[in-house]
Length: 371
Ligand code: NAD
Image (cartoon, rainbow, N blue to C red; front, top):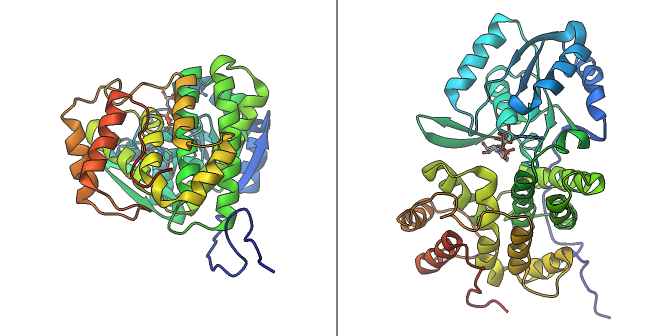
């Protein structure tokens, strides 16, 4: 009798390694009311609250609920975590005898909390307000003199993450869409990671399903509570994927485009994802089959992601994000200069096609070997 491997394609004897990351997660609506209880649980007595401009009101509420455990506030986080901002915040940490951090915001605010934790080992409670996923990873990207570097350390992994759907209700529709595609990219690349494993594949497919269902709805009805819940749930799972397994071509290209040309993070991820997946498709037929199922299409997962981009009103291409055309060959050179693992070998001509298509805002093409 022949025996078929399970839906993940892993038979029981395929070896793999899985390492769970120890973050405590609270998920729901109104969960931010548990900030003070979580601070007590972590035995924090002097909490520094980090937030960006949209969350001043929520920050004031958390400060008052923290009561005697509240010590100070810092609202100067910036995108890509510049070290000069971290140094200013660290002065405040020292001056106010801070023993824990509460970060309320997107990946930029979380990045500052992580940068402080790297240098002080202070415990972090994070209330995410976008779908970036940084709160679930032991990864920190920092910028020094305009150069962005990335490191991995368990010191930067938040101790507690409180997902409160209410905090995402006012994330503007356009930003919600591209931020959700940023999460989608973590889940998609986890499916074909070099160190992929069946646990992460299951989470990744669940994440793709939730995001694909929710994002077009949120774009039309930003206050749709169930869709907001699904999107945040999908983003949480995507964050676990990003934190647990290695990423490939898509994330490397976005890192280069963000670092070298200062392109906006979430928008760049949305634009590149269909093209990077199309590039890898010939090398990962089983993943493409699973993705089609999760995206509820019969074939061509990259086209399905491109269609979601159109539905959510993502920027048409890298040119629409302000990249000049001479950036195309520069991106390819940089991608080839630092070799990294990818399921399909990197070929200069095809990478030029990929970045040119993404620059123009064209639909993703098929690469040799694709069905
Ligand atoms: P962001 O945190 O910069 O937020 C984008 C904008 O949206 C900001 O102006 C912010 O004030 C606003 N905003 C956030 N939440 C809002 C809300 N609920 N309502 C209204 N406005 C809101 O952007 P991001 O995409 O969340 O994060 C990007 C940063 O995170 C980048 O620096 C990226 O490198 C980093 N990141 C890191 C990791 C990691 O694992 N280390 C993962 C993903 C992203």
